View 1: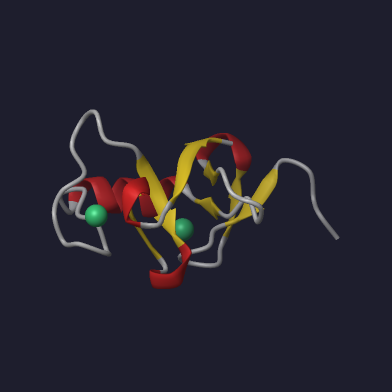
View 2: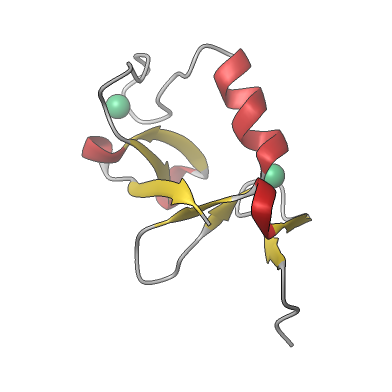
Length: 82
Ligand SMILES: [Zn+2]
Ligand SMILES: [Zn+2]
């Protein structure tokens, strides 16, 4: 069932190598693949919940309700390297 070293990206549903993914620090442990994260950074690190950028010292989170990335303060589970 669970293949070691790979995770399913919560945003694009693709299987990604764990070392390139980030894992949300919640019960589900939802993951974001490196491609989705890079795309989000390129797009200006905009929070899906409040629409403003996530700045340097703010925690990045995966916001499952909106299938996107944003502030952990906006309801996201903090994203750390898996
Ligand atoms: Zn992805
Ligand atoms: Zn926000």
